[in-house]
Image (cartoon, rainbow, N blue to C red; front, side):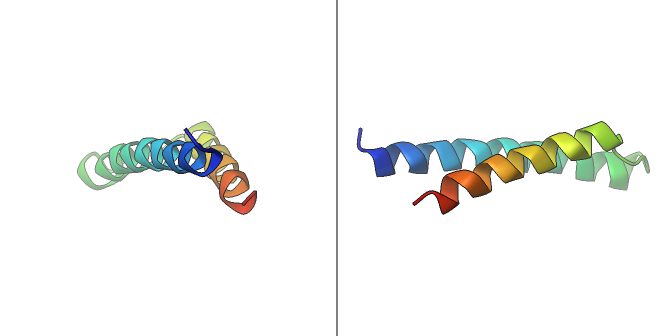
Length: 58
């Protein structure tokens, strides 16, 4: 697999993970009227930072 294809797959994997976690948080906020824990938000922000580094390293 080429380096670009590897990065593309890595980005897709990160985006899929982020999407599912954000969807879960959204459902908790809208259905249960509960806010996410600060640590959960920090974790997602960290994952987004990793994703940005991958994208910017082109």
